[in-house]
Every structure is written in C-alpha cells, then in structure tokens.
Amino acid sequence: MNDTSMEAVEVKQDILHHVKFGILLILEIPSVLLTLMILIFFIAHRAVLRVRQNQGLFLLIIVNFIQVTFDLPMVIDFNRFGRVNPATPAYCSWWTFIEYTLNGAGEMLMATISIQRHIIVFQAHVFNNRWYRYLFHHIPLLLCIVYPVTLYLIIIIFAPCDGTQWDYTSNVCGLKNCYMVYNPPLATFDWGVNNGLPIVVITIANVALLIRVIRQKLRRQGTVSWKKQRRMTVQLLSISLLYFIAWLPGIVVAVIQQLFIPGFLAEIQVEYIFYLTYMICLFVPWVCLGLFPEFIKWVWSDVLHRTTPSNIIKPKK
Image 1 (spheres, helix red, strand yellow):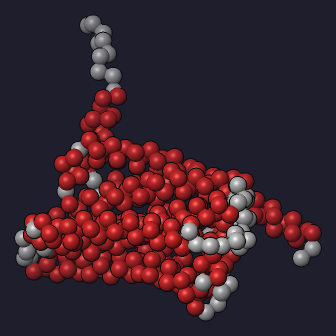
Image 2 (cartoon, one colour; image 1 turned 135 degrees about the horizontal axis):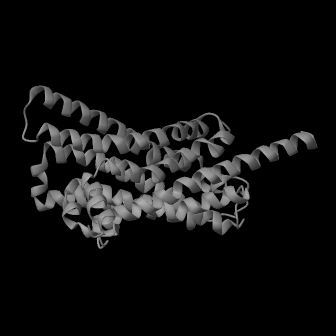
Image 3 (cartoon, rainbow, N blue to C red; image 1 turned 90 degrees about the vertical axis):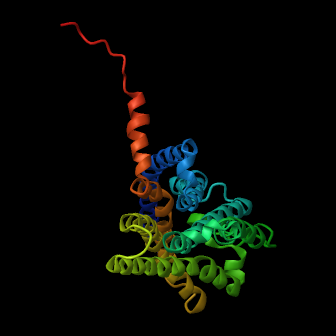
C-alpha cells in the first residue's frame, strides 16, 4: 500500500471516529439524565420497587447506568483521540474487565428475568414460599452479578500475560485479552456460554412466554387478567428485542472466528458490529418510559408541577 492510500485510510478512520464520537456523546447525555431520574423514582417509591417483576429490571437499570457512566466514556474518549489513551496494558486489562463484566451481567440478568417472568405470570404463588423465593428469584439475580465479576477477575486481571498483544488503535484495545488470543477453547467457551447462551435463553423464553399468553387469551382462562399479562409481556419483549438486535451479529461472528475462520470480519466486528452492544445501555432507559407508567405520572405530577411557578400574582381586574 503506497503513502497516498495509507493517508486516505487514515483520513477515513479519522472521520469515522469523529462521527462515532458525536453520536455516542449526543446519545449518552440524555441517557444518563433519564436513568438518574428512573433510579430516583425507584428510591422514592419503594412500593413500586417491592413489586417482584420490577426488582430484576431495577438491577438491570443499575448495571446499564454503570456502563453508560464508566465504560462508555472510555469508548467516547477512544473515538475522540482515535487511539487508546493511555496506551498501557493495565488500562486495557481494566477496560476489558469492566466491558466484559457489565455486558455479561446485563445479558445474564435479562435471561434470568425472562425465565422468572414465566413464574410471575403463571405461577406467582410459588414466590409465597420463602425458600422458593430465594431459590428462584433472589439467588439467581445475585449470581448474575457475582459470576461475571469473579470470572473476569480471574481470566483477565489475574491471568499472567506480557501485555504485548493489545491493539491500541482499536476500540476496547481490539478485544485482545490473553485468553482471546492464546486460549481458543476458553475464548470459545466465553463467547458461546457467557454471551451466546443468554441470548438463546432470552429468545426462547420470550417466544414461549408470548405463545403461552396468547393461548391463555384464546382460552380466556387463568387467574391473571389479560390486561396484566399483556403489559408484563410487552415489558419483557421490548427490552429483550433490544438485547437480541445488539448481541446476535457479534456473537455469530465471534463463534465463526473461534471455530472456523480466525480473521472472519475482524475489522467490521471491531469498527461496527461491536458498537451495537452500546445500544443497550443507551436505549434501555427510553424503553423503560413505556414500561413504568407510574414513572411518567410522577414526572408530570411531581417533578414538572413543582418546577412550575405557582405564586404568580394575577393582575387585578
């Protein structure tokens, strides 16, 4: 490749980075503000948080908030400079640890919520038993946080590596962790089980939930009203569809790379496909607007009403 071609490629990359920087920054600011308002709403309205189907979503919103405030700024900073800054192995290790942990926790939470929604909709009485409540609700949600944190601490932070494999010209340092580069079986397990399996579970659980709800609607039987079933199903399908769109292309490409063609769509994966996953932390708060009508009522009645001047002196007639 001659100097002119190299210069053209660099200009193209520079423009691409600036476009991504602008888009991510524009989307990040309202996402952070809206998520903060949702978290404040949950804290101020404990009754809403005590509703069992909202507890898993609350954890999911917290994970997404951490991602949009800690992980996404590093992505934005990379696109601002067009390179990893600072370009050190330690920075890349911690960046990928945060990225993988939050992504994994989000996927596992969504998969767990999808399974739990079947129990909440059709077998809600199961949670009346204290032990079942811990076994099928509290402990699975806790494991969704503890497992990815522990796993990626071991295979990323504590794993021995010389740090020469990192790519400081690519987002998230090229995703070139030691195990991704030097341990294909572990890399395949990570992509297949920790990323791919949750998406499969999310898809199957939500399709099955939709089928069960429609069948019960046709039979017009059951203890749960159709209106309540419809709302709870739409809640889950909205966020699940977001996860499906964001993760499926990247998982398919990654599995092909690990099993068949190592360099399959590698540049497109890093530059475009992987950015789809940021749709989740950016758009989940907006999806939640339609999931919590109580939140919208609170914003209109309490937040906006209180900021409207009420002591304006009316002119005398």
